[in-house]
Image (cartoon, rainbow, N blue to C red; front, side, top):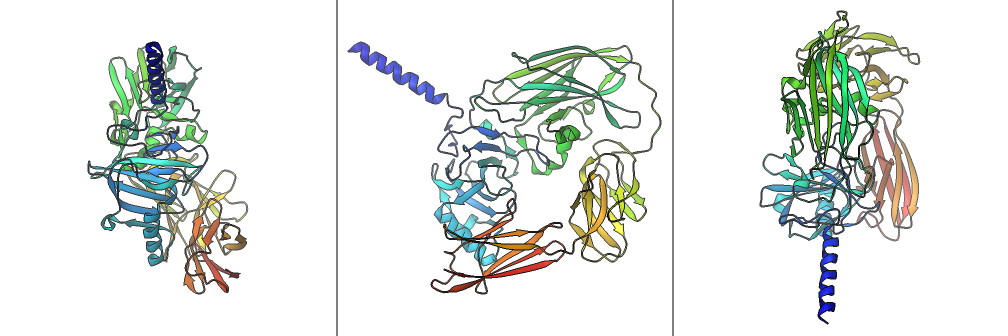
Length: 551
C-alpha cells in the first residue's frame, strides 16, 4: 500500500513537471498569459519587419479565431481602436504597476466593450475609431475575458498580437521578460556579410560567406582576405523556439574586433519614434530577398534603444594587418551561437572619384521640373548621385530616377513636380517592371508634392476611373456583403446607409469587402430596406450603388 502511494506521488510529480514544461508558462508572479490555451509564438519582440521593429509578440492560435483573450492583470481599459489596417480591433489596458498591455487583431470584444464601441461608431458615423475611454469605468480583473482572438487589420493569419508598454513613456517592453518560454534551440547563423566604406563614404558589399548549420552553434571561418579599409560586419541569423519553424528575431547580438566591442544590441525595449531607423539595423537589399541580415555598423545606430556601437561599428583593417573578430548571438533564454573569423587586409583597389550625396548634409536638387528636398540625416550613408530622367514608354511622361537602385530613407524626403495638373493627377513610384504605386499627393498652383520614403523612380499618373461596387448578396448568417475596389489611387472613404441613415459596415481591404448585419437597428423588419453604398477614391472619383433588401 505504501509503495502504491509512493508511486502515485511520483506519477503526480512527473505529470506536474510535464505540464510545467509546456512552451510558455501560463502565469508568472505578475502577469497571466493572455490566452487560456498555451500556443506557440509566430513572432517575437524586436523582429526586423518591413518598416518597423516588431513591438510585441505574435501568439499562434492554431489557425482559428474566437479564442478567449483574458486580462493579464487587474486593470482598466483606457483606449479602444477599430481599423481596417494596423492592429484591426485592439484594446489597451492600463495597470497600476505603470504598465499598459495591448491586445491586437481581435475578432471581437466582450459584450460590455462591444456595446460601447458600437455606440461610439454610431456617434461618429465611422467604422474606424480610435477613442480614449479612460472615464468609462471599464475595469477588469486578472483572468476576465475581454475579447476573442481574430485576424483583423493588417494580419497575415489568425493570431494574437500582444504588447507590454511603459505607460508613462509609451516605450514597448519585451513581453518575454514577463513570461518564460521553453526554448532550447540555438540561433542558426546562415551567413556573414562584409562591407567596405569607400573614400567618398559610400558603403558596398565586398564579400558574403555562407554558413552551414552547426549542431553546437559554433562557426569558425578562418582567415578572410579583404581590401584594406573600414570594414563593416552583418549577420544573416534566424532563431526558432521549440516545436515550431516560425522564424524569429535575435535577442542579443555583439561584435568584438580585437579587444574592442564595436557593436552591442539587446532587445529589451523599443520606442515608436525609432521606427525610422529600421534600415540602420537591417540590410534593405537582403530583406527584399527574404533574408534577415543584421547590420552591425551604421552612422545612426546609437539612436536606437538597446543598441550601442563604437566608431559607428567600423573595423579598421590595414594592409597586411590581421584583426580577429568574434560575433556573439543569443536568444532570450541564453541559447548561444558564435562566429569567429580573422580579417587580413590586402591592397585596396584604386577608386575613381564620384559625386555623392552625403548622409550628413541637406540638399535641394533640381531635375528638369522635379525638385528633391533631402534633410541631413535622411540617408543612412552617403550614396552615389545618380539622378536622371527616363521616358515612360506607355504614357510618354518623364520618369524621375533619383538613384540607380532603391535607397531607403531614415527621414521622409519631399518630391515636388512643377506644372499644371488637375486633381486626378498623382505622384507615383515606378518599379523596374513599370508598375506604378500612387503616393499621397498634395495639389497646389505650383504643381504636385509628395513625401517619399525611398530614393527610387517616380512619375506622374492620372486616375479618372471611379471605384467599382458589387453586391454579393444576402448570406445565411444574416449579413449583407459588398465588394468595393479601386484599381489605382485606392479607396479613401466608404459609407453605408440604410433607409437614408448611416449603418455600421465593417471593411476589410485585404478582401475588398464591406459587410453589415441585418440586425443593425436601422433595418426595418417586414419591409423592403434601401441600402446605399458610397465609395470615393483618393482623387475624388465617386461611385454609389443602391440595392433593395427585405429583412
